Image (cartoon, rainbow, N blue to C red; front, side):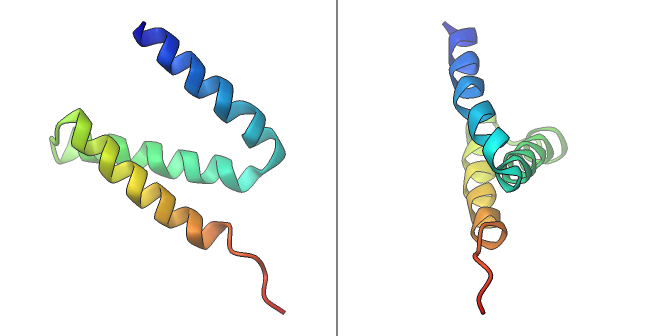
Length: 69
């Protein structure tokens, strides 16, 4: 069941990333934050996911901002 969750996440992520490259950057930022939190700061996996989700979403606010004229 654990592998099915990863496969579902990848199945949702890949088609979206093909359409918009900025979303790939947001996903990579969230992955790096999760790795940093869990490996360097030794947080539990649950807290690392929460922090990575919040900060990754916050980075998306700036990356997905439309150009104002």
